[in-house]
Image (tube, rainbow, N blue to C red; front, side):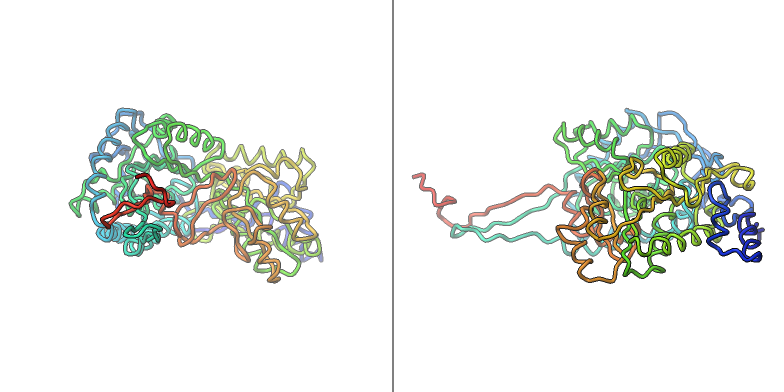
Length: 554
C-alpha cells in the first residue's frame, strides 16, 4: 500500500539509547529544529469517488436559493495538504444575496406553520441522508479543511447527532404556565421563530457549525442562510445539495436552506441586512466584535462563537497518564485549529518535570502527514497564513524569554517530499511565564505553553486572566478542588471540565463561552431559545377586568 519512513530523529534517539543515554538526555540533544517521529510517503489520495457521490464537479455553483447559480467571481478551493486546487466555485454577489434573502423568507412562511413534530420528521430525513454520505463528507472535510479523516467523519457525525437531538426536542419544546395574581386569568410563555437566521461559519468546522445552527434553527421554525468560510465552499455546497433533495422530497421549498458563498463583503452584507433576524457568527474575536456592533446597531440578534485561549490545569494528585493523553489530543488534534484547543498548560511544580517529559515523549510519536493517510494524527495547517502565524508565535516565545521544549519548526522539503507541498508544522511545547504577552494571545496553531503552579487558587487566577473564556479543564482526584473549580470562585469559562480535554464537547450541552468568546450558546440544553422570539401572554377568561397590583382605575 505504501511506505512508512522512520525519521532521522527517531533513529538518532534509538542510537542514543543504545549508547546508554536516557530518553530525556537524548531528547535534550534534539530540541528546536528536529523533525517529527515519522511521516507517510503514500501517494496523494484519489478523491474522485467522494466528489462523485457528493455531486462536486470541476466547477460548481456557489449560490443556492431554490435554484443553483452564482454571479460573483470564480475561486479555487485548495487542499492544504498539497496547496493544489480541488475544484472551482462560482461565488455570489450582492444581487445573489438579496435573492437568497427574499426566497428564504418566503419559504420560512410555509415552514413556520408546520407543526413542530412534523418539522422533526423532516430533520430526521436530513439525518438519514447525511448518514448515507457520512464517509464521503468526512473525506471532503479532510481534503478541504485539512483535519485527519477520523476527525472529518466525526465532524459530520456531530451534525447527524444534533439532528437526532432536534428530533427528540420536537416532541418536548415545553413552555411555562405561570400563576396569575388575578382571578380568572392565566399566564404562559410562547416561543416562536425569529424568521431568517444567517450563519457565517468558520473554516475549522466547515460542516458542524452550520449543523448546530441549522438543526435547531429549522426545528424552531426559521429559514437558514449560510455563508461559509471563503476557503471551504465545497463542504457547504455538498451539504446544501443533500438538504435540497430532502426538502424537495418532502414537498417543501428548498430555499428554506439557502447558500451564498463569497468573501468578506457577503458576510458584512449579512450583518447589516435588517431582513436577517439572527446572525450566528463563528470566527475571530476582532471580527466578531465588529459583527456584534453592526447587528446590535440595527437591533438585530447575534450569536457569537469567538476565540478561545483554553487552559488545562494538572494538580499533583492527578492521574498523570490520563492527563497526558487528554493534553495530547486537546493540543495536537486538528493541528491546534479548534476554538477549544488547549493552548495553556498549568502543571503543579511537584510533577511538572514528569508531566512535561511524558508529553514530550508522546509528541515524538505523533505522525504528521496527509490527513487521509492511515495513522496520521496531525495534518497540515489550513493555510500559508496560518503557518506564518505559527512562525511569529515561535519567535515571540523566544523574544520574550521563553524556551522551546519540543518542535518549533516549519516542515519543508528537506524533511520529506510531502512537507514541501503542504502547510505542515511540528506540534510545539514551550516553557513560559504566565505574565508573558504571548500567553494572552490565541495562536491558531499547535503551540502549547507550559507553566508551573503551586496551588489551585494560583492556577484558577491564571486560567481567568486572559480575555477569552471558552473552555477549561482541571485534572485532579480531590473532590473539594473539583467543586471549587466549577463553583463561583472557579473557572470563568463557558465550558468547565474535569479530567477530560478542553475539546470534544458533546452536543447535549450548550456550547459557547464568556468574555471575548462572545457569550453565545449553540447546540444543546436550552440554546434553542436563541433562535426564538419570546412572548409572555396573559389570558383573561373571566367576565371581569381586575388590574395587576390591585390598581383601581374606575
